[in-house]
Length: 106
Image 1 (cartoon, rainbow, N blue to C red):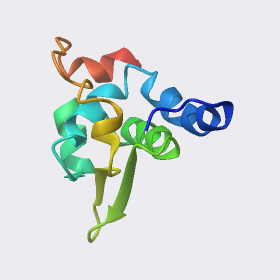
Image 2 (image 1 turned 90 degrees about the vertical axis):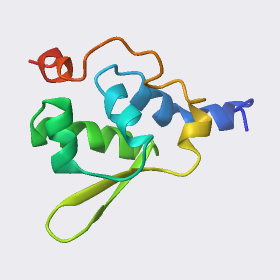
Image 3 (image 1 turned 45 degrees about the horizontal axis):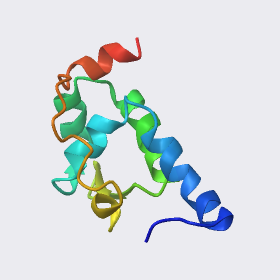
């Protein structure tokens, strides 16, 4: 459902804010494939766990991802319907290397 009224737009604002930062988009793109361990994501993205946690919080606050503990490590997963909401566009045709993500915030 597309937000149409002021009330709908206010509820959608946290999602738009979370997706509005280009450093979070590679994380969302990776999670489109399903649930992943935080450790694996830090290796793939070439970033530290503290930076990933900061991004995770913003995406969680925006209703885009959730996490759960599976033993000691955390698992991140996309919220249901997120792929439909972003229309499969996040990560599609991206030319930026994932490793550049760590350097973007330095």
